[in-house]
Length: 89
Image (cartoon, rainbow, N blue to C red; front, top):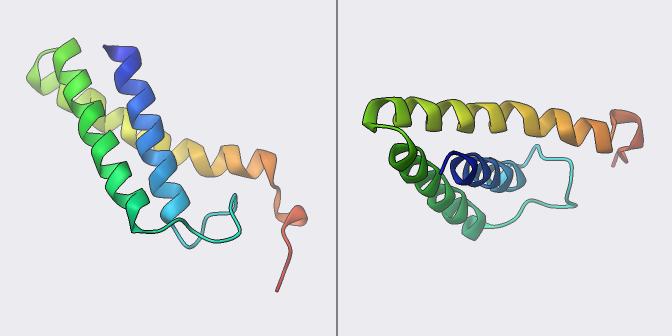
C-alpha cells in the first residue's frame, strides 16, 4: 500500500503542476479536469497510506508524500528543460 500511496501522490502532484500557469513542460496548462484528477489522486494517496499504516501516521505520510512531490516536480522539470532551453515570447 505504501508504494501505491507514493505513486498516487506523485501522480496527484504531477497533475497539479501541469495545471499551474507556471509549469514548463507543456505549451499551455491542462484544464480544470486536471485539477479534479489531482484531487482524486490525492484522496487515493491518503486512503492508501491510511490503509498501509494506522490513521494518524497514514495522514502524515500522505501529506509528506504530497509535499515531496510538490517540491520535487519543478526540479525534475528543470533537469529536462533548463531555463536556457525555454523560449521567451
